Amino acid sequence: MGDIKLSWDFKLGQLHHRHFVGKDAHLIVKHSGKALDVSGASKDDGAAVIQWDKHDGDNQKWNFIPHSDGTFTILAKHSGKALDVSGGSKDNGAKVIQWSKHDGDNQKWKIEPASDGTFHITSKHSGKHLDVHGGSKDNGAGLIQWEPNTGDNQKWIIGSEYKVSGIGAFIGHYITLQVKGSGKFIDVKGGSKDNGGEVIQWDKNGGANQQWKVIHNSDDSFSFESKNSGLLLDVYGQSKDNGGKVIQWKGNGGDNQKWWVKEHSDHTFSIISKHSGKVLDITGGSKDNGAQLIQWDAHWGDNQRFIPHAV
Image (cartoon, rainbow, N blue to C red; front, side):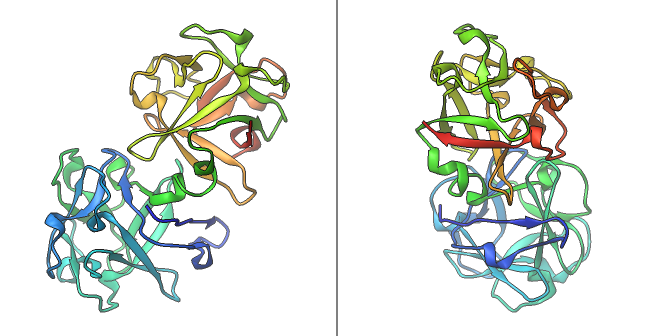
């Protein structure tokens, strides 16, 4: 995966072209964890665009060409052809294909943020979203356009927004995570090594229970492993509710142990649960030692922003 970084300005409401510093991004759909793919690595006009297990083939790598209107043409690396709504259709269910670049509005896409740190990819000509047909999680499911909704089959993780930039520099290494709002650090309560040990904030103490190994997963999510216990940061009981407690638990491959990471303009990070779409949060915005880590709807307040420090 190439080094591509996206930065969003919520006031201006557009993706800043100047923050693209590379190319060859994978586009990962949130609901299935699969990648946007040109079927069979075809180089032909009209070839189907599908989802498929992520691999390193050039038919899953995409380059973004900016336009002055704030949209992008999205080009497949292997063919040089553009992501295109077939026939310029404005209908729900119209197929998304690759086609020779011509700069028509059916080849121009807006990149717009969702509340969970993912992005919607919206066709300029129709206003409809890039969508995995029927919410399928199967390899080979076709890409279409569909009217905007809240489904995870319309939400996309764009390449190294979650990998190369920011937190990706720490992959395989231990870090501490400082809460911006309180200045305290994410901590396993009492140095527990047990499944279910509570995760809290506490003054910096240099202990292994405040050190976390950054693990990069195959779906471009991350897991955080406690140096003290070898257990992973986990949303208790796979809760999807606001207030769901964050604990440590033995690694099991569950999405409640996988996290997306969103970088903000102040170079802090928010940590977003893959299974719920909610954000790692200090309960009530507390600044006290012992305050519980929970998950909560994204609001990007300082109790949802963290500063990583290399150990």
